[in-house]
Image 1 (spheres, helix red, strand yellow):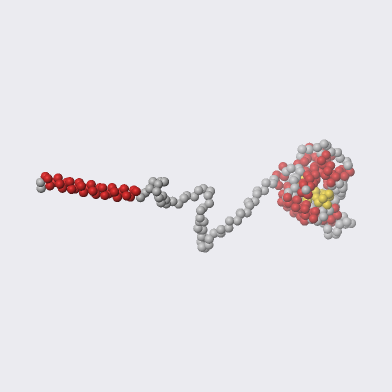
Image 2 (image 1 turned 30 degrees about the vertical axis):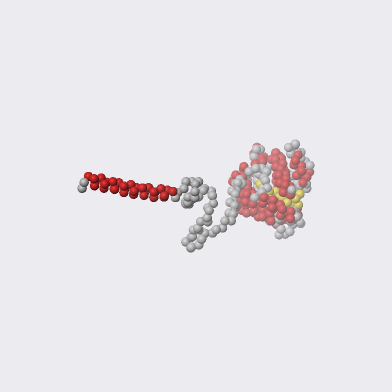
Length: 331
């Protein structure tokens, strides 16, 4: 082959390659022209990917329910859940020595007072259940007899003295020398001339005096061989009678420790705790006095004069505290 023919062949191949390259370039430019720049011509198609859930945002669609092994769909009840019970923050009976001297009325006692008013209980009357140390000879009668004086900080107590006038010197059927918790439930401790043969002293006192409040101060005469459980059981029976009749029981601790382990004061605190009752912590009121205000010459069982002064005043303060809270209820 001549040199001229070789050059001609090379030229044709080069021309063919150029033409093919030109065709490919035109095809490429045509494809690019179908995609427009943002803001020009027809918008490009946008394929939106599934969005991830924003924390705290509700789902856009209801998810398919899971099924249990029985093939049942779970409940779709979305009603408001019941409120969680609040913890009981009241002081425990075991710490009764640290309970306040003057109690506050619980809502349960407000309901008992309303019940008593519907039954005709006298809001101006209180009674006492106790032994000889609850006799009006020593206890509270000074406020009906005028044998008292109030300091400037105590003048507000006069309103309560006037409110319960007559109750301070009242001798309850349920106040007797040596009275115990079971004795307050035994008809043999009644006055047979005014009480029924089978009527308990507690029921007789409610019927005759019609109180809205009862102070309970028992335990000194409880026989040492009797168990604390028996004492609590009898005490609970007294409480049940009072509550059923719309009467607010105010329990009291005692200054003495005749049982040796304060188990009767603990029983009082336990009964107050279990029944949401007010507790007059007389033990705490006299703990600052020498020998708890008790007479060493009388077996540390009976109060001396300074102990009686505290007993009468703190009992009046308890009645005043309860009276004012009940007045707020009436308002």
